[in-house]
Length: 577
Image (tube, rainbow, N blue to C red; front, side):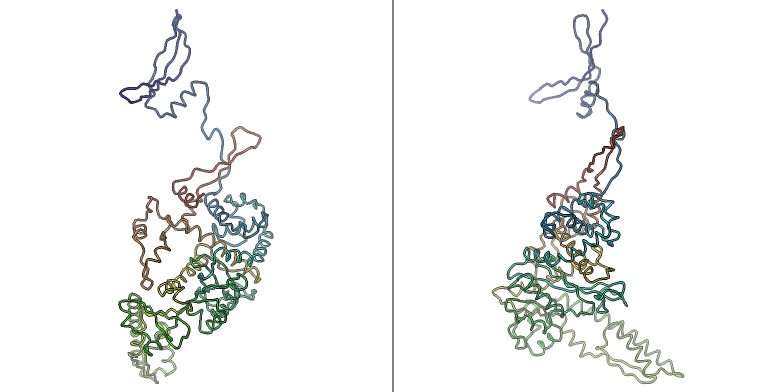
């Protein structure tokens, strides 16, 4: 009788031997031999992956398989990971609620502008074009936004600035806490904006007007408020406006304002004394430190070992003075001074030789003075030289006594504060003043590669103020992102704890973990250390793909997010997303 084939199938054989379980996969065909059903093994599939064995089993049952390219095609891919990280962090911070309590298209447009400033800082005109390459516009429903809507949203954001800053102050400023304040400026193209004036240009752009702005931050450098001033405004004159902001807008009845010595001058400190609940921390200028040395209030020799001492002076009644001596800073200043003096003397000696050579047509006194002035101005050391100039004659000599007196100030600085010892120790006063570096870091981010606040093109003051407010809110989100991503960035983790353990006077030393990260360029988890921008670029490579089913003429599609890489997954985990 002929054999009749019944089926091909995969059998799973499970057997136990000496306490262990063994699983085998056998490809078999079954056939009928007369009245009996027999099985014949064609192949042993046990060496194949379980997924492959499952595919063979399903294929033998009649299923048909096609490649992904045959099943569907990707019609569009948009950057998604960086949008997801920044937008989710903004919402986790509740910044969208600060802008407006109820959802609206205007609020969505404002959120989109803040996120866009972080992801791709550019002009307002170029922003919508960048939206089309990411999922930002789709998630917020603003893909059809017009330029008129964007500028209207910017105006709306400017009108909301005071209320948003009031909410941020309520969150982050505490009674008796620190408020950091500093001023910077950015250049301006054009002549139409009345805020653009010629003043102290910190950007080094000669001939361009500037716009001045002051930033208030909490004790850890988180931005709270920003205020714009005309470009010819002096730094100290901006302080009364910040006092009004703290007392009237924010309702801070007791706060400690920290400003540098160029900001909190004696005039401004006298103004602050009118408000007993408002404390301050600043530093003395070099002329005041010189007087303390001459009067014997500061003994430099006593600071060689301790580096910090608290003194009293009748010239500063009601104040605490903390004298600090940084030996490394003193050494560096002496080195720089000596280098400048040597460079200047080489140029001065060349001028002496030039004057001596001009015998037939001697150089006049005025011409020699101009040349010597340019040399001294170049190195900023004119006070250290005595010049003898006449027609056809030029000599110079060092003012050794002036150099010696200046050397006595090397490495010395004096912190002044109104806060009593029971609320602020001497070491904490020094640490608090050094926190102004956090505001400088904010300015570097605003003006550098992160947010590109400059150049400013807006023509009317309300939009200039709204533009600065938009950039400040973007930095508010960036500050939180940097804090969460510290383990992946070239940044020191547990920075606040490290600050408390460090010497308040000597230069900060990185922890061993931070040094290892910078040396190996690897994190403790084995990831390559990133900059803030490169990490955003890594996240941007995670895309959301629009897929169309092959052979489906209905036009239906579905979206699928690409699988996160280990680095992307870790970045999102640190954000608790």
